[in-house]
View (cartoon, rainbow, N blue to C red):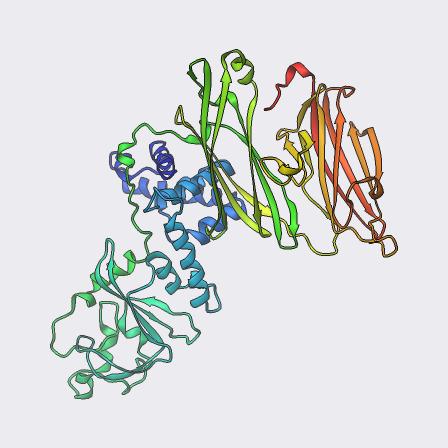
Amino acid sequence: MRLWARSIWTAFLCAGLVCPPAALARPQEPEKQKQEDEKDRKKREKQLYKELASPYKKWLNEEVTYIITDEERAAFLRLNTNEEREQFIESFWGVRDTTPDTVENEEREEHYRRIAYANERFASGIPGWRTDRGRIYIIWGPPAEVDSHPSGGTYQRPFEEGGGSTSTYPFEQWRYRHMEGIGSDIILEFVDPTLSGEYRLTMDPSEKDALLYIPGAGLSDLEAMGMASKVDRFTRTDGTHLPTGRGVGESSKLNVFNRLEQYAKVQRPPALKFKELEEVVTSRLVRNQISFDYRFDFLRVTGDTVLVPITVQIPNKELTFQNKEGVHVATMNLFARITTLTGRRVQVFEDVITREIPESLLKATLKASSIYQKAVPLRPGLYRLDIVIKDVNSGNVGVVNTRLPVPRYEDQKLATSTLILADLIERVPTRQVGLGQFVIGATKVRPRLDRTFTTEDRMGIFLQVYNLGIDETTHRPSASVQFRILHDQSEILSEVRTSDQIENAGEQMTLENSVALGTFKPGRYKLEIQVTDNVSKQKIASSVDFTVKPAEETSAKK
């Protein structure tokens, strides 16, 4: 899967969306023209940014703002659809994955761990990720050593800083053994001159000197001996206010050009290492290789657990069948992952889907679809769902990246599951209750993902109702359920059931129905279900649109 992500990134590169400088080589333009082009570029990007939906603005300007390159940012802003943006985000992390052969993306997990740590450790009136310490920590990770002075206090200057004793504001020095592209034994200094808890990255070692502007205080060795004046500190041209040194040569770390270079480099996004990309010269965007439908439903298990059946439907015409002794075989590898918004993996499942079709049925089968379902338990919350399907015979890949908002079912509040329209709804044998694909409790419910039926079909209806009130006298619920089907605002069908007519009705009630569509004219319809709880005096309604077509216009789904 990581190779897939890297291939997508190569496609972005080859399409000119994230093109390295060498690929954009062109004759030098006049300086004025360059400046005008740069102004136009920034203006276009600003306008594109305004048009972004909020989640993608947050991703761009909060989650990856310190590690995304200028080329990647420009490419992201030029994308047109949310599907493209989701694919870009997956590829963004894919090319940064140092272990592409594993399911986990350690780089992404570590990145969001760093953000969480920065928010917890470095907040100071602004979120921790926005502080200088947060920025450096997110980009470079934890330092090898931290010399912390949270209260400031007495400080003995080293000889290269002029020696002598002074008092300081709170400050920290972080030492990194090595920073890629910068060097070894790097020391970064953060100072809190406002005493607000917000430490600023500085390239001036004198910024922490709390006595800098107090005459006669915090003198250096030479100043104390009358061999130098404290006023000299304010005439330096190297960007510092350090005292004159005691005859020792200037340290390379204090050299103004070295300090400026280091200050700039440590705040840049880390360099990308496009592993394997040079070898992939004919890659293409995979989002169009295999198109498939998907849906997820929500059914309450407990107050804090929701069962989420995830259904995937692949048109058979998208697959490559190979003839093996008169039987045509297609094989798909399916991978799905559910993660939190911080990138923490919650669920991963993989499966192999095989279709074996006799020669005589191949033509009809290509008009149908293959359907797969996996039910996973999740806690309420907002997740990200990634689904990847690979056709083994052709190597083609299809990808879906989407939000997965799992609802919370509150106690005492009337609620329902997802309303499912099914092309198959039937009871299962006792030994299969709760087992296998499409089985919900004692019923097999196979969703019709496009909600399109023919006049020869029976449309299955499935809905669960939760938190019905219980009558203290009968110890049973007292509720009524109205089913209505509308066409062009006209009522085509209406049926009312009571909880007494529904098997095993209690605090939870399962509604199952089946409607023959033979008398329905082709067109769009709406199904409405309203539940009235006579005990708690609550009402709740669910509705869904569906389409009816003549039998010859729609192929059966398998």
